Image 1 (cartoon, rainbow, N blue to C red):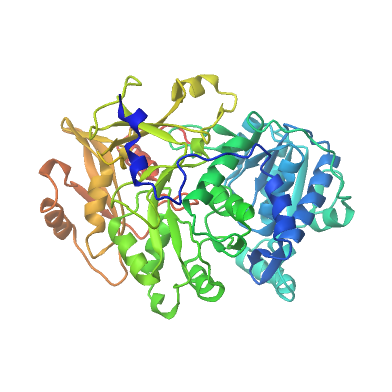
Image 2: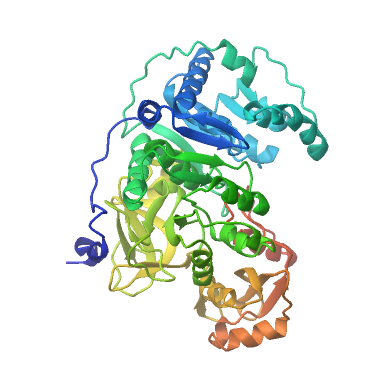
Amino acid sequence: MGYVEEKPWLQHYPKQVPTSLTYEEKPLQNYLQESAKQYKKHKAIYFMGKEMRFDELYGEATLLASYIQSLGINKGDRVAIMLPNTPQAVIGYYAVLMTGGIVVQTNPLYKERELEYQMKDSGAKVILCLDLLYPRVMNVKENTELEHVIVTGIKDYLPFPKNIIYPFIQKRQQQIVVDVEHNGHTHIWQEIMKEATGIINPVEINVKEDIALLQYTGGTTGFPKGVMLTHYNLVSNTQMCQAWLYKARKGEESMLGVLPFFHVYGMTTIMNFSVMVGAKMILLPKFEVKDVLKTIDKQHPTLFPGAPTIYIALLNHPELHKYDLSSIEACISGSAPLPVEIQEKFEQLTNGKLVEGYGLTETSPVTHSNFVWEKRVGGSIGVPWPDTNAKIVSADSNEEVEIGSIGEIAVSGPQVMKGYWNRPEDTAEVLRDGWFRTGDLGYMDEQGFFYVIDRKKDMIIAGGFNIYPREIEEVLYEHDAIQEVVVAGVPDKYRGETVKAYVVVKQDQIVTEEELNEYCRSHLAAFKVPRIYEFREELPKTAVGKILRRALVDEEKAKHGEGHKETI
């Protein structure tokens, strides 16, 4: 019997976390309706001074849903949402689901070319966007299937007098004034809320088959693919999250919402989770370190899902000592490896728990995590969540490798996607015999804890040696002068590839290339030591703070005349 059947990780499960759950086969939007009844007067959202109750949130989503249906949106039609974390992002998401439509989450940072590609690929008929983004949307609209644009602004949900002042601040900061007229194809949010009937034509949802969300992958290795996530995928992963955070008190928690909802990690662990358990979402439209510190100090969130770069930025802020972060009780870090020293420092600061988890867009997203209050292993992504199976397979088959051996991580479970939108060949490549091949290299120890070594595509082959960037990054993060670092393989005529470290130094520190070289040589085998160090003010990141290693590799290839694969 292989370890997959034995599931050695289950021996570590605390009695409060069931190894298997009963998943409610109902549409995701039903949870908002239920919370509107159960937590009617509870605060659902706090946004820049404005508070909204659960019954108000449900009421506004119902109004918007009825209006969207009046535009001709039927079951299965795609509706894009291009918003930062605002009340409208939550209202819009659940409103689309109420119509039987499919949400297409769209990054507000997308340029016209990226936006046009996603709209064409998804076939979205309606887009909900910020007023500042309206010109960008209109520049691509004619080349897509978009028929209607719904426009809203930050000011729409600000309290008085902020709602009056904000447009002037926006004009000064952005040097742009957008004039939008409510007409047949452009719809202004505030007018919609006056005109909408709130009467929704009922739609039958097949929970296991019907798609709730098209979530596009990051596109670091080519054009992004639309990941088809069903209602069942999203409900099951949110229920797993609830089971894992078993100490979370229904109707009492407050969740810091700085991870963007247009990314599946923020969408599941903050938005859907909060709606399911009646937690208050404290929304921040963008990540500004000082704003986050002030918000924690004043609003006292208890739960704070994030990414390593977010925690690193907070710990390195020069005015950190001025703010009280002790309200934070639990954080699950995702999107990138969590350095052990960052985990330890953050826990000392808050007296809360910070643990590393793991997941992918294709898995709704979480598959693994360390236990928040029980056994955990530093450097590990933890163990599979309830009803989630995982194994390490050889690169060219679905056969398990031995415990402790490196291979590709494969997972199965109710949160695994239906497939890629209109890409049957790509789907067949990663979904094999009921298992999703993640593309990540890792191993499992005898206790059943899993470890990610690196992305299969990120492994460096230098002089015949396999080198894993994460191992080198962990060593460099332990150096007192390092704030952020990413290691990548860059072209080398002699070794094929060589190891390069891109380094951001802490504000109050100075370190030289020679010092780092000596430090690495004392902690790493000679073939793993970076041959090149580049000091930078900042590193390129995704919206959730994941460092874009591939962007740096493409820069290097361009320098060496190799060009780069077109990505968006």
